Amino acid sequence: MAWNSFATPLIGKAVRAASRLAHGGGSAFPGKIVERIDPQFLARTLQQLPLGVVLVSGTNGKTTTTRMVASMLESLGLKVFTNPTGSNFTRGVVSSLLAEVSLGGKLDADIAVLELDEAYAVHFVKQVQPDYCLLLNVMRDQLDRFGEIDNTARLLSKAAEATTGTVVLNREDPRIARLADVAHTEDGVEVRYFGLDGSLRSFFPSDDDMRTTVDTASSANIEIDDAAVIAKTGENAEKSEDAAIAEQLPADVTLLAVGDHRASFGIDGETYETGVRLEGVYNLYNAAAALAVVRAVVADAQAMFLPFEQNVTDELLRQVGISQRMIDFAHSTTQAMIDAAAEVTPAFGRGEVIDVNGSPVELLLVKNPMGFRLSLASFTPEGCDTMIAINDEYADGRDMSWLWDVGFSSLRDTGVAMVSGVRAWDMALRLEYDQVPVNSVNTELEEAVSTFVNANPGTPKHIYCTYTAMLKTRAALGKIAEVADAGVGK
Image (cartoon, rainbow, N blue to C red; front, side):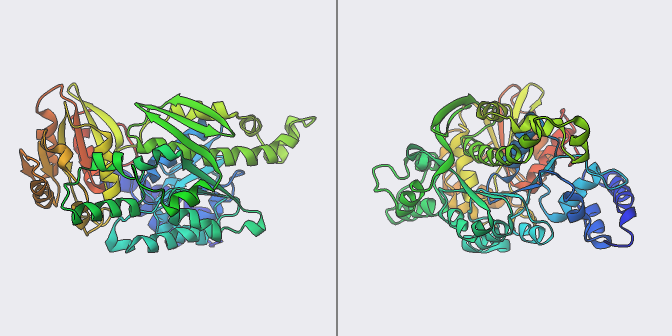
């Protein structure tokens, strides 16, 4: 422990307050300062948690799935610490901790649910061994940072290898499913899977599936419409070797069917159908992932706390650090978990809807080919105005060539009302090749957002944006509409 560790919370809180005043929102800067003056702060603080740490990582869906897991655990009665803004580097987690710890360094929570960037998860697990690790998928993303997806899978393997309790894996992604091999099952680490019914696999193709489809279509000079590709991939084709292997893995939670804000899950041989408030069909699969890890936490809570339930006084429970809410949580039923999943709302910028003068404006984060393809397939453009905002800052990835792996012909009939961001003209050129009409191009994002949302009052609007473009779009909307504070300012 650093000699000055007693002062770390006070110093960190002071830096955080100054940063918020200077930048108008949250910042990872306080975390960077604390990491330098007290490198053990992160591990020391998280070690207090009786139910430990859940680490969530993968290419797509980290922020929404982290929100789902944290919200479900809270609905089931736990006190949860999480990093809700998507600041998913280790210094971002430290900054989030500074907002929650007391001046004495106490964190009032039962469990932490943390989203970690694929690369920074490696740094995190060197300091903190997670009790639970949820790994979602591997897609081509930020090629300038990660290289090809096999390297991303190697990064995620470090998180699976460091986990001390339960590793939850996507059985439909072969690179993720294979990470079961690095989990220390000989030391009691459990491996669980979430998966898809065979009828849904064509809706959630892996990166390899999409690449094969694009290569085949290109060689045959076939026009690619992503909405059609996602619906048709795999139809009338022989089952792939990966799919056959996946079917042999027992899924703890299986997504059986999807509908408009509805989903059916298979758990322990039973079918559970529920409505959901999340947007986009891909988030229904994220819900299966969240359910799988919550079930793992409940199972451990049952083993840890239920033996204390009978003939034990409240005073003894306090002495051993067990609260009544933990015992109540251990009694959570599968139906209670399903009900909790149904109430989760979208994370900021991930299907979040903001009302602007009577027009519902939906923010849709897109940061790689698969994410953009699934968003285009999930949100029909008819009856809506569409804007696309593309930046190439570090958090977005500098290499924007991936835009050419996305088919935009589904926007051809409606056109795109506005294109903006640092790489607006690159995006406009890409749309031109797919014969998508573009009404306006404006690289000044704040001005473009204002023009777009104030046109055609009452008409629903979709804004597809990369990460930093989403933050700036949200900030621009905050000046003309009510936008929830997600810790990133307005």
